[in-house]
Image (tube, rainbow, N blue to C red; front, top):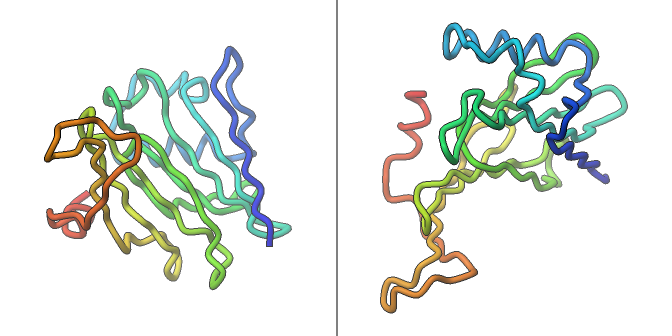
Length: 172
């Protein structure tokens, strides 16, 4: 199976959102964060990735950009599955970027959300679709500095997360 990845970068025009998706995003953000001033301009602050799952359904990966809900480096990442007017939120995460990789055992791809911690550190949480939602199955701390020498590295060194990342996700 070939997964189609379409990335629409934010320019002067907002991305073309599938029918009903913008309303679902507004509803879910308001229920999570309460009244949000920038919701009227939300479609101008989105980055969208679309992955076709089958002939009828797509996976829509939505990231806010700019000043609407973003911290300096990280922001909300919402993942929906659906088609036409029916969009179901299957993952809500906070991070800087998201990537996907085909999972041969399932229709839905595995997702990897990377969050920025500092200039030389970040985390990457691996999500897998289980039943009707994405669930975190692994966490890696990524370091771009050699601790022995202090030199910055282009390639990250990784180790399992030392903090209780699974409990931290349940609290959110």
